[in-house]
Amino acid sequence: MRLSVLDHGHRRRVKLFLALTSATSRVDSPDIVKTLLYRPGFLTRPLLELTADAMRGPSYWTAGEREYLAMCTARLHQCPFCIDTHAELTRIAGHGEIDPDDPESARPQLRAVRQFLESAGLTPDRIYAAEVTADLADLPEHALQEALRVNLVWNIVNRLANAFGFTLREGQLHSGTRALHRFGYRFPSPAQRRPRDRPRRRRGRPSPLGAGRACHHRSGAARRRSGR
Image 1: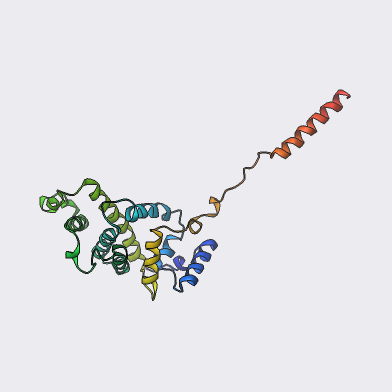
Image 2: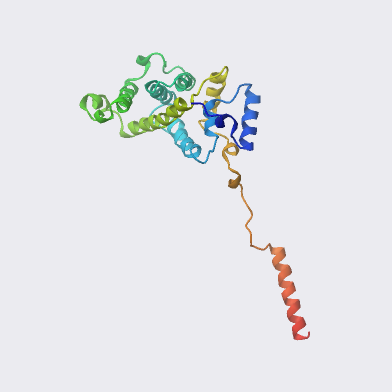
């Protein structure tokens, strides 16, 4: 279901940002960017913090491997927008270490955790079954937790993309994925800032100059009352 507000309902600051980036790249801003910059205080800030850490923070998994897991999650949810995006990001971030079209190109640990995440999505009541966890025995616990965070992020985004009918338009796959990789899943802060986020001067606190004038006025009044 396409919502027109996600195309035209942004604040003026965001509209300027979208217009500038579109003019610079000569490509319309992707649907995911428009969605995240609509009311950013509601979802975008916490989601981007989680995403940047999961996809580009320190990890047992390389950036290319995490993009591959994101692509596998998108395939599970049948999300064309995210499948194509993360397949391209796997190629960009992986530098040839993994072929998104060849599951056997992944190292054994990645294949094992991919199978675990798929089972968690399809049959969550069986994720502790011996046949599901057998291949995870040699995997560090933190590696499994990091893979689950990647899976969590794209479980959310895949559903947004499917619900709002995200589509890739001409040129967006090439420019959008490279910008996403370059900025590490972070947006410039001015695009996310709300008007009330701007620093404001405190009211009711006199400036040093005003305080000096008030002091001088009080001392003059006191001298007049005393007849000096």
